[in-house]
Length: 123
Image (cartoon, rainbow, N blue to C red):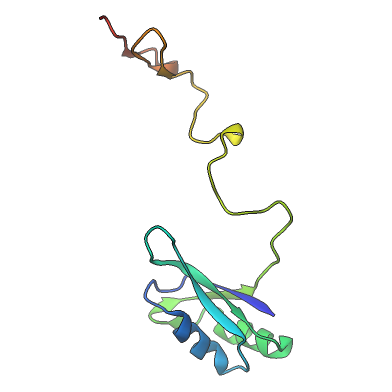
């Protein structure tokens, strides 16, 4: 059973997560998710337990429990749906561009968008 653990203290390690869940049975793996850019915890992780009965016992007892000074949320992880993926920039889905008409003008300057203001290059 794959278990999702959220609201972790940013100092909680994968080893601490594993030790916390071991009191309920065998733990195949425990991993705190780390941000690749900052190399810091994202505040959530996953625990894999081969026995569903032990996994549900851990979920029931550890949900809303304290771990390293944080009240954690523990629930059965839902499988990733097809088409779901990590975040990222997708211009065709909006990206960072707004639809207010503002932006750079070919003739020079900056268009102010809906506000009507803006900078115009006079040179």
